[in-house]
Length: 123
Image (cartoon, rainbow, N blue to C red; front, side, top):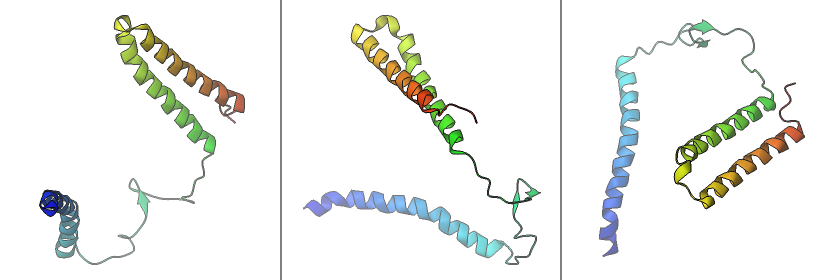
C-alpha cells in the first residue's frame, strides 16, 4: 500500500536524473562522433582570454581583501533590508521601528568591532 504512494516520487527522481544526465551523455557522444581526435601542442596549449600566459599562475592575495569583500556584502545586504523599511516607514508600528533599530545597531557594532580589530586598515 505504501509503495504505491512513493511511485510518483520515484518517477520524478528518475526524470530529474535523466534531465541531468542526458546533456552530459549527448555531449560525450557528440564529441566522439564529430570532433577530430588529434591533440597536438597548439591544441593543448594553456591560454587565458586568447593570450598565452606568462609567469607563474599562482598569485597570492592577502586575506584582508576577502574581509573587505565580506564587509561590503554585509552592508550591501543592509541597504537591501533598509530600502523596504524606508518605503513603508509611515505605515509601520513602533515594534517594527525598534526591530530595524536593533538590526542597524547590530551592524554598527560589527563595524566597530572590525575597526577596533584593525581589519579595515589598508596595508
